[in-house]
Amino acid sequence: MKIVVSIGGSVLARELQAEKFASYAEVMKEIGRQHTLFIITGGGKAAREYIKVARDLGSDEATCDLIGIELTRLNARLLIAALGDAAYYEPPLNYKEAKHASLTGKIIVMGGVTPGQTTDAVSAVLGEYTGADLLINATSIDGVYTSDPKKNKDAKKFETMTPHQLIEIVMKTEMVAGANSPFDLLAAKIIERSNIRTIVLNGEDPRNIFDAINKKNNGTIIENNRKNEKRSNKIELESDTCNLGYYSDVGCDN
Ligand code: UTP
Image (cartoon, rainbow, N blue to C red; front, side, top):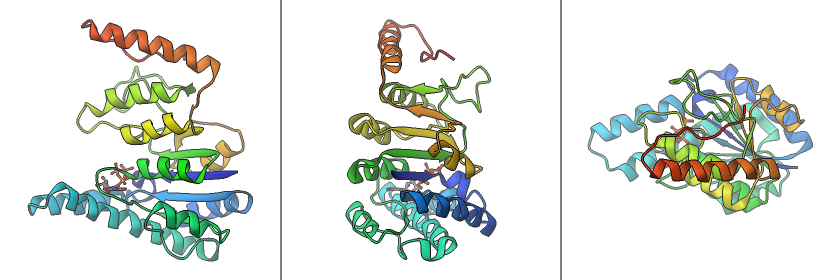
């Protein structure tokens, strides 16, 4: 299979620790031996700190984004260092370079590409552009919930959902400042148009990624199938209800 794994900065580099990169590299090598593997690394705490300082100094948002991109690439370099020979030696700077580099048969590790988005979007576009069979978002939450589980104890986890449902959830979550969204909106839209099979899972333990690839799912699967389409219709109805002035949580059967 061709697999794109997006590793959130919040799991890979909340604090910079060699052990974290090494434990990820071990599992990624195992996956890379059986599959074509692309990895996108997030920026983590350091990116947020750099961006804050730049903002305090009066930088515009695009400049802050460019600084964030540099930090995602630094994390990519650290993971490449941990992967050694198994990885392509440089983080590609764009999608074309990444596709070209994958012809070497090595694991490709890269960060952000352009201002105005996050690495979620990079992983979704790369998945589409390379015709990936699977996109995995390894994040700090163990799946997609009806609302932010860190703030709402009644939030329910989806075992499966449609890309359309994902968009609904992301739009709802992104409206709340500081909320934990499973994907950014651009990524969710790309997932919908490309219909790439996607799994959101807890990336604290990299073995969860290995397990998900080997059909032992532990997160939320996002794909179009009959069962999910029915749920999607339900959401459309509930959205209409919202337009009438009622608040309604996004439907979840679990
Ligand atoms: P991240 O993808 O790490 O963003 O990129 P994030 O939302 O902070 O993710 P987590 O919480 O660590 O998982 C870090 C920053 O880099 C810039 C953005 O400013 C983003 O917030 N960036 C990243 C871009 O502008 N373009 C990209 O393609 C990628």
